[in-house]
Length: 173
Image (cartoon, rainbow, N blue to C red; front, side):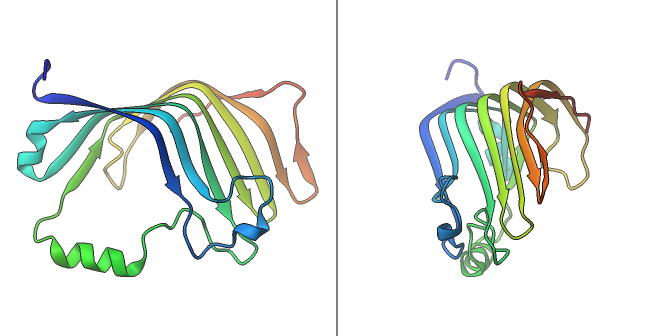
């Protein structure tokens, strides 16, 4: 550990699978088994915070990946991956809560696909480079953003935006 109390974790080919009770058959084009895939994920963690029952991730850097947010025709989401039973067991076992803190997220070459079959809505955006800074662990937070997000297409019912070139999106939160 060269920069104590900070430690860096490097993870390769990180995959989070979609929820089990979500209907994958409604999606032929969208990799319905996968909620998240990142070729590279780097986390900078403050080890000293663990003594105070906190996990301070000062920076998360994700490169070359996709986030696949899907809702089937019945309204079931692929991102509800923890069952009620698992949540209840976790709460009962832990006498002290572990607080998760995150201050900076950087995305590089990450695609976001949102397909909602229940509401007939599709969105595809791509982040060549994008930064979010804020106190994401709070219920009410402000964030600053910088970088590029490109809109590849948006569709809701008969309404379609499909630019010839990806459209740039500017966001302030």
